[in-house]
Image 1 (cartoon, helix red, strand yellow):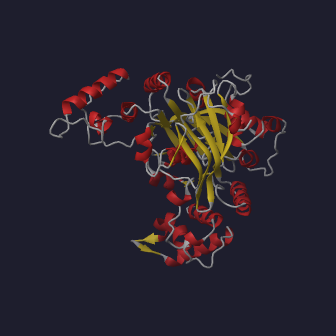
Image 2 (cartoon, one colour):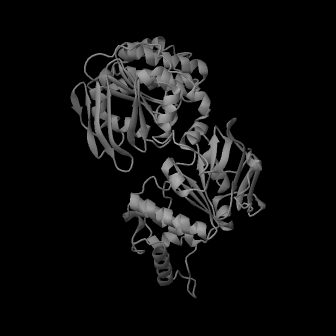
Image 3 (cartoon, helix red, strand yellow):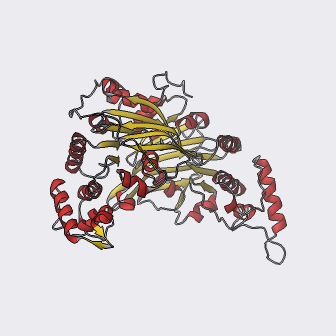
Length: 523
């Protein structure tokens, strides 16, 4: 059934907010392509999809951050031309973001009524009236906060509650919640859900974005699934199983995947000796919960999970780039000091980040300088860098990785995505790591470059490097890993070894323990 055939609700109520054929392009790449979406008054509508699916872009179109290149946005049946977020707010659309975008130096009450403060007869802010209205709103939300407290003194969870109170204070007809529970404790999540249900009873339409699948069935009436910027499915949450939801998010047919046999891994890695990496009980508040992981020399261990499962957080915690609250990392039997990138590098841990543009390449530096960045301390004496050593290292790795550049002096931003990725891999191989953490190493590169990177990972394992591989592509993990650890909501929930390594088993593990349950059981 296409979305054009879907009614806005079970009783055919006209949508309060909808998009018709919305398209948005950035640099020739379609972030959204002909997307239809309908939100009914008095419903909680889940919006789901993996990274790059188009969720954030659609929300920004609905809230006036982006103007669509084609298609329409309609509010209460009327076509809208939002040019800025305030235009959407003025008609009654409020948004609660994952990152609280309020003013930390102002009080709770001032943040709730920012830009709409009550005034006295001479035009000054009526602080007493503002605080009184804020207290009434907090009581209605059953939130125990001193409204005169400076917002920045509160925890993230309390700040999220203030953002919710602000959304309620404007009496919106639409509230969009973008990952609102990511920083909340269980009690705060319960409060948020209670408020969401209260808003639904008042006829408010809510769009709810969350990577926590259990929350969708607990709270939401309907769901819309996006994939690669396109609409995939809209329907009742109660009529959709976890396995069906995950398979549609990933673009895999349930029957097709279930019928696949185990994929034999082509390279027989030499997994020898004691583990090169042991991760024990890693804890990061609200993000990772007792993560255990071990990798032997010559072994590729895959980390699988849906968006928000904790894959990137796990490797960043191991690398010292994400502050941990507990647990231990050892390399070759030696404990690594936590929360220190310098110590992790010294111990032999290297991390290829998921976002090569923001956390990897330095675009205006040359290929040579980008490769040399991580190894500068080793080729320096008394503060003087050995240019000859750098030249030899760069030449060796450009030849070994087949980096296509006019010369080592070419700006790295002028290279293709695949060659930029090879430059980053070369940077870390220069450090002669014992453990290589690879976060989405083939994302955003063409098919030819992807094959080369995959072959290189296999070669590194054959040479005895311990590799942790994160990929959103099931086939890449199944074909390239010796074992796969599956994460859910920051916890390791399953492990697949060579005896049951197949796309069908991985899909079921990604969907969770209840994946084989009948339709609707998860509702």
